[in-house]
Length: 162
Image (cartoon, rainbow, N blue to C red; front, side, top):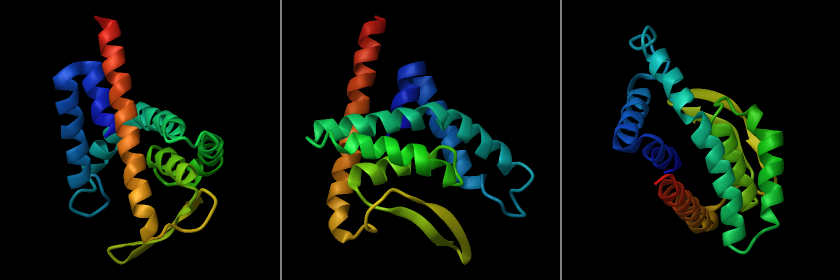
């Protein structure tokens, strides 16, 4: 939710639509397969560039959402986990976002993943137990708060520009 709001705030509807087009293109052809190897890399790199700032905005919004939720001590966990753990993630943008969420929720994310039969070892993000089904409502509430914090910031910034 953060990146589309960010690009909509920066460049209006054309920025929002342009971002979504590149993001969708990356999702469709930005992975390593023989069919897409020759041109999918460009979509993936462009998507990485477009998400660099919004990913860091998401980290800030996650920290602010901890305060909004009445858990200001979690801000320290968010900052610690992002600084320490985000670089271990293979994605330069998903790493900070996922590490921030792990800190905000007090769980450990990452590790071994299996994608279509390919095992990928990703770094561990956060401290605490692995998430359980009971954490799903908390994660959903966190995502809602992050979206609302970002929306409030976008509306405020857009109104100040006028």
